[in-house]
Length: 253
Length: 301
Image: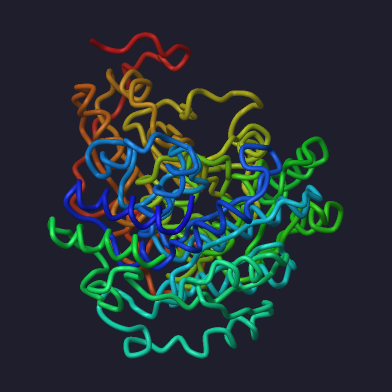
């Protein structure tokens, strides 16, 4: 599986079912492809590395990744929000999904609990969490950041730094910068990288935590008319838009 | 013995047998809790004053196979972290046990920030089991047997035991016969015993509606006496009685608002209007009630 396939499957699913989250789904395609094809170990075993999707509204690209990795049939994608098992926010009854999410600010605390249990059990398993950048406004993230650093937990946080929230760009709504310095001050080892560069992501994710990878991404990445447009946070595609989007993705990545 | 000590001593003994048990606290102590922390440091975590994270961490521990018990002052544990409890614990049905100290006006001189008058009603909206301790004996029993997701409400201070060991029915107990039958829970059971009439304790929620209906179907009148704002226990009792078609005189006594006055618990109860309100109709005396608590099979058809 690769980022191109994740993007195409996500777009086709949203097109078929009418509407869905798009901007933040496209921004983290490389993050998912690197995690599931190169980083996560021992999947399906007791000592598996675990991935927590804290920004639940990126569920569609997680589903696309899991479907491409064989956790469930690709046909489930065509039933998204249509009385199938997949909805806009994930739950842990879906094969491959670790936790219920959708309310922001919970995932890092959950990851801290999992990583603490691993530490108590002397397990080498790693724990990964994907946060949205706007999600870092939640106070509970910083409670968890203090906890994870204090207990020196093996957690790798990836912040999908696409720069946009629902109503605009994060810096004009409530400035997050200097985001890396904030994490650093909370006791985390911080790396910045291009969130669309798979090699850079792989390197940044190779080291045990507590580590934060601030992945600079573009909301709507890969589709010219969606890139950096907050209007595409959630939306629907017509025939021409889908055709153009797929063509660009095929040509690009 | 103090209720908290009875409770935490039982958890202490349980932890010795079960290494998967983890006790967490939001920087709130008690004698036997502190002893637990000292003797089982690998099974104790002080999460600091950060309840939202504490609940999420507990859920994460449970996802990884641990059995977390999470202790804090009622309001901060449940109301502050309500959504974490709802999403992280209840929606995933995880075996986490919440222990809230400070039911009702336990912390009578600390004001509404510390009065546990909204937590029970709030937690009754969630799919978990609630155990409301009225005395050291049932707190021990809950500590020994509880499985999460659950919320246990305990008290600070000394309270007498109410019944002989092992006399527990399915979520409720008749403690004294009489008319009207006063339904109470937790500390308010002791208040009910100071009044005329029968006393029935409900210690587990959701209420076993069938048993409640069976127990009350031949009675004339019931009074629900509670220290929870707006009377959530009365609402739950009334719902069950109506659904089971029990016709009975019904009275709810509960606080309507926060109390910004400071004094003894009894003083707070007066200020909250928990003495018999003016205008309450006289309830009939005497009883032709037949005890049906022994079995749960005979619901009135």
